[in-house]
Structures are given as structure tokens and as C-alpha cells.
Amino acid sequence: MTEYRDKLIDYGIPVILSLVLATLLQLPQLANHVGLIGADTVFHFSRFYDTAQQIQNHNFSYFQMNYGMGETGRIVNAIYGPFFAYVLGALLLVAGSWLRFQILLVYLLFVISGIGMYQLGIKLKMSRVVATILASLFLLTGYIYYWIPSNSFNAWGAALMPYVLMQGVALFNDGKRRFNWINLALTMAIVGQVHLLSTLLAILVLIPFFIYGLLSTADKKRMWRDTVKAVMLCLILTANVWGAFLVLYPTNLMGAPLDFSPVLTALRLKSAGTITAWVQIQEVIILLFALQLLYVTLNYKKLKLNLFFTIEGTIFLFVSSDLFPWQFVQRHYPAVSNYFQFPNRFTAIAYPLLFIGIGLTVKRLTEKYDFQFKFLVEAFLIIVCLFNFRADFQETTQKVNDVKPNIERLNDFRDKNLTGIINKNHTGNSDYLPLKEKKNSWDIAGIVSEKLNKDNGYNKQAISGGRLKIEWQGDQDKQTILPITIYNQSRLLVNGKKINPKLNEIGMPLVQSKRGKNTAILSFKTPAWFTTLLYISILGWVMMLIYGVFKLVKIAKK
Image 1 (tube, rainbow, N blue to C red):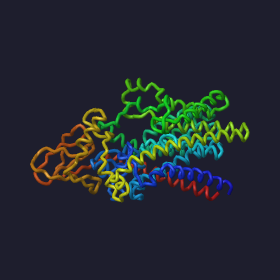
Image 2: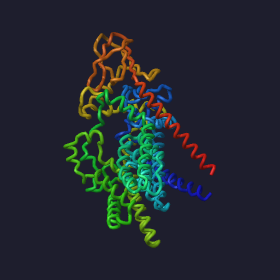
Image 3: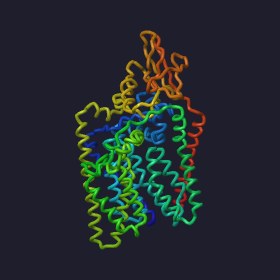
């Protein structure tokens, strides 16, 4: 009973902490019933609106988006966190309005993040006080908080990093206790279904832990076998993700995300900022990291695991910052601007690594010195949390004050009719559009705004079988560019005839319009082999769910 009580406490503490911090940071929104639109809000809202409508209308289209993204037939969700997009689409239906949905997402993100960071601290034998402080630092610093004003999806990848680090610790300690390959596969598969780029970051962070574990374990063949099994299971659980890439990329020239200068989007370590996220960092956090690095440098022989966390975290922090030669990288490797976009993304792994290193240091110091020293160290960390909270709260308050005069937007967020936000805020992103030739992503975004989003005079409707119907009135026989996009696998019927139209720069078809009513039907031909992969992935998750239920029943019987 004592063991179960302790487990209940160790889950209750981070849940309560996360809910309290999420509530406090959203107080300006909750008090004024204000929804926020950040740089990525419209893009992601449109993704979730599409899956929500698919679920509500029982009209599923895995690739072609017939409800979101301006009803243009674009493909986004299939290669951007597909299963998670359906989960959030279902949550949107439950929420019933964009305001409630946005608030619920903050609570969900904070609870997932808080539990992960707290449990990682507990697994490393930290006290509940220290684990709570670390969880607070994690929630208040970087991408987790930044989700509130920006809706940057990097936050969801960052939220899962503590769970990835738990697997890193298991790999590190494989010589003492065999790591669980199923847990490793599940963790990586969840990251892959949520945010693909974070999967790459997770792999990068795990490699050093794996190498150390492999060198220190007595049974290297067994560790290799377990690793291969984890990789195979992960591939099964993410078959829909990598399968979609195999469908699209070999046969289509896919548009890249908007490119940003890495020089301008690197973390500014040379000059501290007023907030805790994006390219800014507080002075107290820099001081905290500096003290941690100094301590580990002076005591590295006694601190193997702490050394791993701190050195790896410092390296990723350096790469994320303006201390790294990003000007050189931008000049010689311009693709980095498109596909990685922001060097500050590395903070999603640098921060949890360094915070855990700090926790390990505090654990060792408090065991070595008296109560007064323990009190001083913990008080200092709490003060750092308060500094970060103040900065975050001021940022949220400012964002809310900026949007409060916009009555129309406030009403759209509160309205149970979800179409207001979607119809009035078209996404101009260049991501994953079918291109005729390579083109600058900002030029593509301009064409999207100028042509693809200009659909006045066209009536669009999602119809059975995951198809999109477009109707318009023609005043004469002439060539017309339809406000939809065509991929190599797309099929287009115009006035009952299958055609193979000419396409403009972003895959918009040029069709022959007749006088009077015209009808076009767009569909996507999904390869049978991909459908097989999709079912394999779904079956894999069902089997994992059954496996988890059996484990819980077994634990309950004990």
C-alpha cells in the first residue's frame, strides 16, 4: 500500500503543479475570454479542423485535405504528425470552440511535460522538492511556455523529450539493468506520430547514451539485438509516417517549409532577453547553466551520468545559439534554412538535459552538506522559477492586451461554429505543395496567397469517398485555373471527364471551363501497398494498447 501511495503522490504532484502553472499563465486569457493567434496558429488549426471534420462527417481522406487548408486538396497531415492530428481533431470536436480548444491544449501540453520531467527526476533518485522545481523550470523555460503565445509545434516535441531521456538513462545503465526495448520503441514511435523533426532530435540525444551503454555492458550482442528489435517495432508503429514519404517524395517535387535565416533565429546567448523562449533567454538561466558547467568540469571524475547530461546539453545549447557559426552554415548549406529553419529548436533538448544535470548536482550537494545549504540551493532555484514566471506572464498579458480590441476575432474564437477562424485566416505556408520546379519558399507562399487562396466564385464541398467537389459558373468557354492542388497521385474529373491538366508553379490545374455550370471532382489514388502499411501501423498500436492493459492488470493483481 505504501508503494502505491507513493506512486499516486509522484503522479499527483506534477499534475497539480502543471495545472496550476497552466492556469496562472493563462489567467489573462481566461479572465478576458481571449484566444491568441501566433505565427503557427492558423496552420495547425487548419490541420486539426480537417481531421475534426473527417471524424464528424465519417468521410475520411488520409492524404487529401478536403476541409482544412482552404479546401484545396493539399497534403499536410499525412506527413506531419498524422495520428496525433486525428487525436487533436477529436479533442476539437469535444471542445466545441477554438477558445476552449486552445485552453485545453495548454493544459494537456503542460500535464504531459510536467509529468515527464518530474518522473525523470524521481527515477534519478532526486527528492520530490528538487523534481518539482525542475519540472517548474522546464514548464516555464523555452518551447513549453512558448506554445501559449505562438502555437509552435516544437513545443509538443519538447514535451516528449523527458520521456526520451528516460530511455537514454536506461540505455546508459544497460550494463547494470537490461533496457526495455518495447518502451524505447513506443517512446520513439509516439514522438514520430507527433512531430517528425523531434524524432531526429531524439535520435541525436540518445546516440551518446547508447554508445556508453554498449561499451559498458557485458552482453553487447544482446544489447544490439534489443536495439534492432526496438527499431523494427518503431518502424511498424510509424509505418504510416515513413510510408507517406515513400508515396509522395519519389514522384512529386514537394515544397519546403518557409526558410528563415539561422543567424536571426539562433538563441541569443550574447545578450539576455526579456522572455524565456524563442531566441531569448533570461540572465538567471544563463547563470544557472554556467554554474552547472563549472561544477561538472571541476568534479567530472565522480559524476558520469551528470557529465553526460551536462556536456550533451551544453553542446546542444551552443549549437542552438549565436555562438555557433551559423553565418558559415547558411552560406554553404542553404537547405538548413528550409528544413531545420530555426537553430533555437535545439533548446528543446538542451534545456531538459541541463535541467536534469542541475538536479543531479543539487542532489549530490544536498546529500553532502547540511540542511541550511540545501535550503539555500533550493531557494535559489525557486527564485529562478519566479523570474521566468514573471517574464512569461508579462509576455502573455501583452499578447492578450494586443488582441482585445479585435472584437471580430474574439467572437470567432468563442463561436461554436468553427469555420470563422478557418475562413478568415488562410494559411500561406509553402509546406508540401507539389511544385513544377524548385522555387524559393517565400515566392511559393506569395503565389499561395495570390492565387490558391483566391477562391471567390467557387463552391467547394467534401463528398463521399474522401473526394472534393468544386463547382463554378462559367460565362464563356475559356481556360480556368482551379484553386486546388494536383499531386502525381491525384485524379481530376471535369464535367464528367478524366483529364490530365497543365499545372502552374504550385500544382494548380488549368482546365477548360464551359458556359454555365461546371463541376470538377478531385480525388487521391492511394497505393495499395501504403494502405497495407497504414493497417499494419494501426494494428501495431492496437496490439501495444492490449499489451499495456495486460501489464496494468498484472500489476493490479499483485
